[in-house]
Length: 237
Length: 169
Image (cartoon, rainbow over all chains, first blue to last red; front, side, top):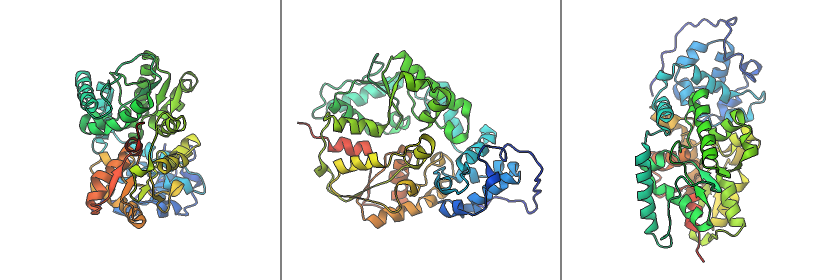
């Protein structure tokens, strides 16, 4: 596996004021016990070590952490934090480190997807007309199955009991996987709906630490609830 | 989870105006109210359940309730024969695909992180693993299955298990 170029000599700069050291429930109470590292699936990849991350934050090594790929290898599963005897907010620390990276340098498709979502309302930039066509197509296919003949996809229905978002990957590439919930709703006789715009249920901004984008995306779900006068929200899968 | 977290943080009033269901609540409600009927014989093979970090451990940490019992109740209704992995619930191993890692170029690392999950599944001898979270499901079905040669393993969503177990009167 690729090795990062860790500098030989590093200025520890204990007096440097950094955002990371000052986050609430932050690294300053770390006992360096290492249970976090022992619980972690990523320990050892390219020297990855949760305890070191916490320690580096404490020592003010912000630049090194922000530039490192460590915070992006972490799967944010929380096994470390769950058992931390000092209740350090390790997930918050990882997310804050991620947020400090220039967002254009975020690895992979995370930031690109967020930008797409802000612009188009979904992570895969599916235009509204295409989305409606896809859903109608899949609904037609579904209605051909035994027992679902009168199924109609309840797009944009006012006053529904349950409003659902859609996981962007489903209309994009896994349309058959949408039918499971359709089948359950149909059998239960549920009165449900999906909004025609801003239907994305997945919020990638939680991973990059981009609070502004995260709030915008959540706010759109609230707007859809108001607009469609829905009674209940099914939290995204 | 991001949505619930965001609603709590920025739109707390939402919970006074609207009802909120998790996927678990809704499926359990339908079964308990008799609105759907499910048959355990739809899944006779040995199955196991993967607790996604977001629905389990992290829900407990962020919302004060982890969804551990609910999916297990649903498994009981829809599968004849299923066992837990070890460790499970709060201490469940991560599938390796979380935190956006599915979307970064660090694929080798993501597959490596999933090795313990694979060991855990193998140890159960299950032919079916149920993973509700979309990311866990992708990681298991589209990556780990191939990388670790789990050719005979079937991966399903929890709502897929419920949908497949529905019997129409």
